[in-house]
Image 1 (cartoon, rainbow, N blue to C red):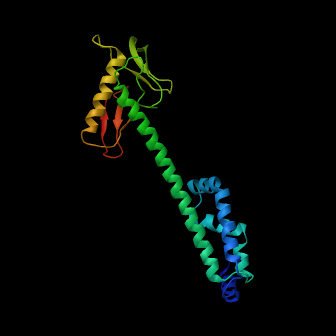
Image 2 (image 1 turned 180 degrees about the vertical axis):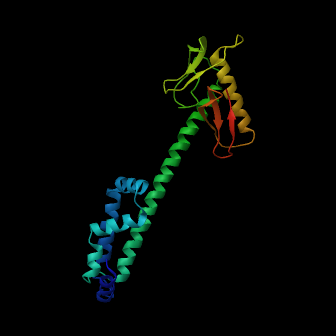
Image 3 (image 1 turned 90 degrees about the vertical axis):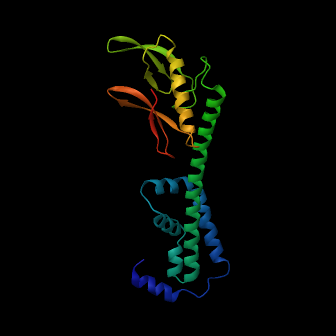
Length: 218
């Protein structure tokens, strides 16, 4: 809305809107937000901002034109936009909360399985990467030599140095359990594990966003 047009609209706007109009418009706008929640949140994540989405919703119900035509008071117009902004902020907050709760639930499920199994049952060793499937031991080739490999259906694959005293799975579970316990001594948050290259070979690392620890495990 151009500056002159907005000023004329403000002058022409009634002191009070017709009885019930504000609430009807506000209700319609809120229903629009609920109905289009996914699209609006997708827009906010990608390219849009809160103010743009507020104006987009208000245009869907001609809120600006109601002000221009003098059907809606300026105070009620501002109240509707403020309510819309609050509603969108609430939706963003709820989505963030839902995502955080899902991450926490996944982490807690993994930790529960981790602690119950104690990483000591050869028949089922939980993958520290996907935290869902069991690990398997197979044989691969590295530098022309047969090498034990620990892998998971999620795509995790890690060569393990041969050890005549124990299997690759036993060695893996021992090192992961030790790293987990060491981290728990000084940090209450659950760590994560990831694979990265170091010295031209794939290695397993423990990381923690809470305390900032970054530890090579294997």
